[in-house]
Image (cartoon, rainbow, N blue to C red; front, side, top):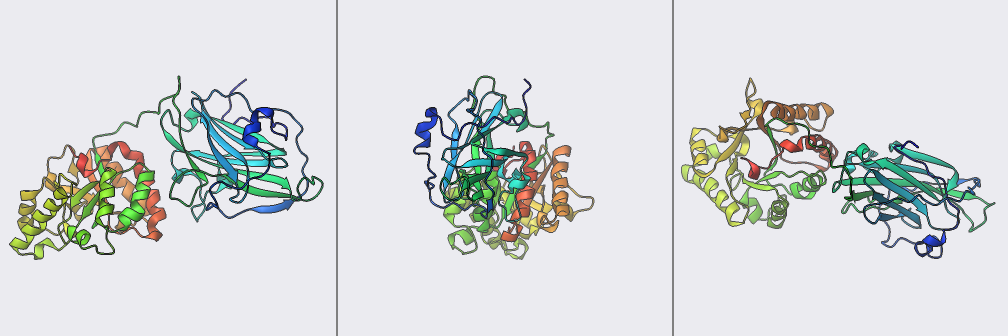
Length: 440
């Protein structure tokens, strides 16, 4: 019998089998264990009494590599069953199961993706089940339904993390066990475990290893280009807004900081604890001078202090080595360049759009004080054309063996959806992405 990407299984009887009795308890709808969850808007409507299935069929034997990860199937107020996820060497198994009497599944919607950003979402960033790629309409309603998806279809292998969003349309008689009276249809979700998000309807799942589990495909061949991602000035949203998105996508960046703002606890800037958290997560903390003054306006002693003491601060706080300097305002001349070269090994002081024809630093880096950057803010990255322009610079650096620093300043709440989208596109080139601490 040929395997299919999505396999429909026959329903089993309304009453739980003895084998499942322990899991079913008294077969009643229960309250969630963790209190209300921030689910998308509830969908409930009255329907006519359905014709129920009388077929007896349990879920198939499935030799998973580890115990299934199980989530409550709930509308945030009532729990009618579970969604469980497991895998063997070839397939991902997602099983919906109703464990309560008088409740049934009428339809299912499922999305499986590498990151939560790839799960179809509405304009409020809630999962949009009617756009999910896998769907089943179950007439008559059933007690259980399983999707078997080839691991090759989700391009993931042992040890890889994926996300699963599982919705079910659940029906039940409104008046207890009065099957002849009115029925109710409602949306229920498998409640997931992505922490700190409003979308608990999305689950994290790590593919278990077992004999024959395919390894993930190797990254696409890349040239020797280097892409780094920097957030200048140390604004607080680097930690509160940008950092979580970078973490979700498996990306690390650089924070170019001004110690005066951190030590002075200026409200709009990160504090020391937040900078330390970035560093602990693998980010590079690089110098942006003590106070972000225009270097060309400083006296010789002021210039020396701005560069010397900002380097010393980074090293004294355990964020070193402090060998990279990001020039404030990209404003410097030969006098300032000489002092930068006295204290640092690399400097980014130009954007590729400041010159015609555009100039990129080459990899291997033979001009370390001419590292080149591109600022998506002016593309702007909030538009599809601006994101496409930014990606052209990323692709060029990768293709031509060049260096580009994709750098930002403020990222506002209104810009976050566009920022997520741009970062998800840049993440496709992760094999070429480095922090400044990883420069050769």
